Length: 167
Image (cartoon, rainbow, N blue to C red):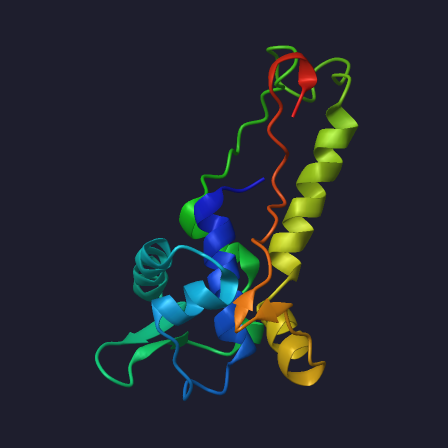
């Protein structure tokens, strides 16, 4: 569905949404990474891209850091997804070499359409406000030990399968 850059960018932005207060609170890339158990240099690289895209506002130096550039309700997951992912607009069927819509649909056509629709709903119908609300209004907190998440975040990507279907 999406790659490591998109996943890490969303995780990083979710942390900024949690502390959103109009831009007064700023977190360093290191603070964001620590709060999400991510790699600091990778988060710093993504923050630069997100800043160039106008999603975050970065301030250098002491007292600097990153904050969301606009209210979390104005930032859709799609805004992040579109920075890092290439959308395939083709209608070629991956299981017949033809073009979907001509002849009988392939064996998993309906499932692929349902997956596309679910992803579109998630990306266009979800904003960073969901993270702000759950953290600030509902008190949702990750399980931590000394401020560090207890375990690495689990990926929502498909599991890797080796030979003979073994994980």
